[in-house]
Length: 261
Ligand SMILES: C[S@@+](CC[C@H](N)C(=O)[O-])C[C@H]1O[C@@H](n2cnc3c(N)ncnc32)[C@H](O)[C@@H]1O
Image 1: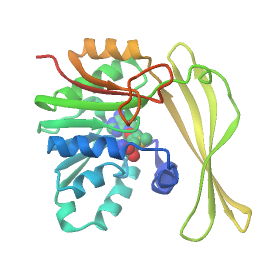
Image 2 (image 1 turned 45 degrees about the vertical axis):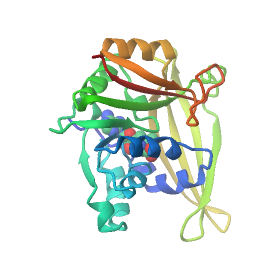
Image 3 (image 1 turned 180 degrees about the horizontal axis):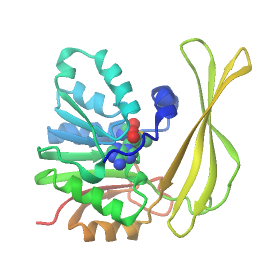
């Protein structure tokens, strides 16, 4: 079952906003992984192709799956701009990571830039890991990232708006992206909130759009338990995309896992 598209507004602004976010440095992490592996690669939650396209440009076959038709539409438009040699490497599917049935196995599966944080219950988390595992070839690896919770800030700031990013669109309008946290569940370690996109022309607000989102965050021991329950063993753990050791100051939690032999 494909659930409701929760990225409709965000998909319109996704590529421009993450071009503006210069501290997002995950491509130099995922691209060498794919190159060393050689593929075929499975990207789950591929979105608009921010990671998928650089991999395909290296001549590596990649299947991209995403639940959001709006994100995949942007990716299709992006793909149409690419050379045939790149397009021929890409296979796209609408799908839910909890119940994939792609009839293909992959030596590398990746879930980059937090799609796993859209898994809000233990049932969903285990279903997603089982579903990806079914698509791993012998000795195939799964690599996924999530943010390392900032415990000092995680449970505060409800109702406050933060300006996160700003950029100019092709019409010369200024777009500002704000984030507002609306609720927090300490029980489930999740929050609801909204990305707010405000478009200004000549300094005047001409459009305001909101995209609600829910995200779950994970503790390290919780991930260890989820992997154990899924019969996945950890090959590597990192605390940042430049592969620093996970510690209390880490910005990310990144795991490379494979099926228990
Ligand atoms: C923050 S975006 C990341 C996109 C891309 N991987 C990147 O690095 O830019 C998260 C993506 O996960 C997708 N997603 C959320 N839940 C999903 C699910 N259950 N199955 C597949 N994709 C899902 C969203 O539609 C969205 O495109």
